[in-house]
Image (cartoon, rainbow, N blue to C red; front, side):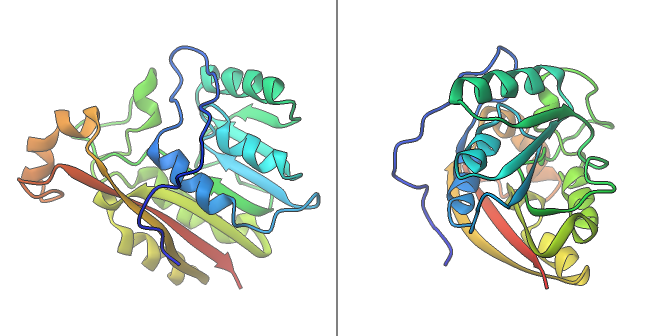
Length: 227
């Protein structure tokens, strides 16, 4: 079933160190999808782009063995602090999202990667913008994850991936399906444009990624299962 609204249950924003991407609508939507997964004490979970560690902590609270990865040193530190405050034992490490899955396989991969389309020629190397900048079409990290997922999932394993409709929902479905996964949109929600998208609205319209009168963005969670 596709969710058209954000969940209404209380959502506690975990404390995070200054300069770390805090949980927002995309994290909350992915949390809703994660809550429906059949997690047990034998489930191994990889949280790609862990940020404050909110998703990793949710999975650990349900008994999973969790690894969280982020390129930001501040994020890794913040996630470790938040896990300690939540009383959860989680392995966090610094790493590139496109290389973090090499050589290992998991029962469940969850990811809220950088996916905002950007007029910049390259990706930022420092600062908070690394949490959202996804290249000209917003797909640099999304495409990496789609390509890596089949080899990084155990038999019957699943990927939960959240991103903006601006970077092409059908493209993601096609990539995952073409890689042999069973993929579908499970959750979606329309939210007001955030400050980053508002600041580059003219460019998005010029690129044909957004209509001139749009003031909202669709977020989607795509679930892909190895079959």
